Amino acid sequence: MAMDIRRMLVLVEVARAGSLTDAAARLNYTVSAVSQQIGQLEDEAGQPLVERRPRGVTLTESGQAVVRHAEQIERAVQAAHEELGEISGLRRGTLRLGTIPTVTESFLAGAIAAFRERHPQVDLRVHSAARSDIGHLLASREIDLAITWTREEEESSGAAGARTELIRRDPSVLLVPAGHPLTGRRSVRMEELRHEPWIIRTSSNVLALLQDACEAAGFSPVVSFEARSYQEAQAMVAVGMGIALVPQLSLYSLREDITVVTAISPRPPARRIVLARRRGERLSPAGTAMGTILLETGRAWKAEQG
Image (cartoon, rainbow, N blue to C red; front, top):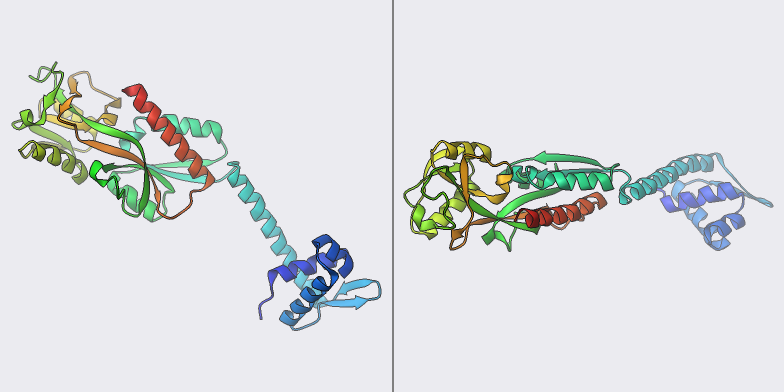
């Protein structure tokens, strides 16, 4: 029969006190309750653990062995309490954050700086990945928290297996080369773009946003170039390969030889930038703190950038 850890720790107090009466006082038990605990522990051990004497008790050889192991357990429990206290107080711990590149290039730097200033002893690790990989990283527990995006029609469901909270709406803008007929226009309607060649970033999710916007305007887009990044897309727009519909967050580093048309009628397609975590699980104190900072920083960046 396995021995009950709580009863083993009672035996430790008896050994330290030297009597059942003094141990009971330390534990805030009655003497009979301590005696009963020791008796039950002896039943579990199958041998006597204490010798009762006129002036207190002493441990048998078996009792001494149990106390040695119980003290190891006691030290482990105390260490666990101390470590949990340090983690909850953000004096230690590790936080693994996943992010998409457009967030890395925009407001994430401010969030990281704020987190490190407030919680310098937390080991923060950041993994940048495509939207399609973020869900896998969360599910496999390679990251604890993520910034990703969903399409607006996914608002109710969010990312599969994840609980999401909106940070900001990220509307798309139109990039055209310098000298293009749309340069200087205050607004443009999607149906005016039916004959334009398109440059997209290589991603089925990004392509779906463009296709939905074009189909709503009554045409299918003709893609002339698939870029591996939004910076590459800007370069191809600049040399006249086509026009591009890109998220506003991707304009953090904007080339001088392209023009941005921000007013797309009737409403530009947009992404929802969200904070994602595993559904049904509680975040660590570090994760909670970073989540708050990301929400604050992302929303403030939106206000500053217009």
